[in-house]
Amino acid sequence: MNRLPEQSELKGGRLTPGLTGRIDLEDVTFFYPGSKTAAVSGVSLSVPTGSFVGLVGRSGSGKSTLLRLLLGLHPLTAGSVRLDGYDLRELALGHVRRAIGTVLAGHHAISRHDSREHPDG
Image 1: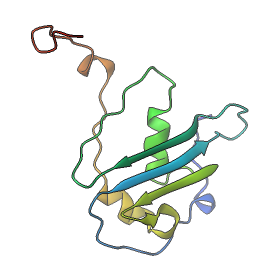
Image 2 (image 1 turned 30 degrees about the vertical axis):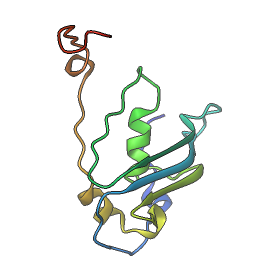
Image 3 (image 1 turned 90 degrees about the horizontal axis):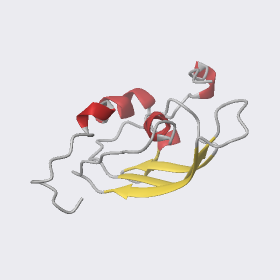
């Protein structure tokens, strides 16, 4: 179910612009092959240049799938991913992957709660 698509499915484009970091997802939907349920459905968000974003959610909620879509590891079923206004399909995927930094953390990294730092919650 979590297989990577064959190389022929993800050719990518040829553009290699200097990317500054703006990310826009618009109505992104993705189904893994053979699945009748969308792994992500109708996701839209904008991340301004220079921002840091954390995706949190329960297991199976689509966090890793969104990252894979952003890196061009899976083709979108619907919607669009844009980096600095360029459609991901226009960009050379190796160029995109070198431009995006990720830090993956297990639940232990974010599950500790110090009520002195966050008294409301």
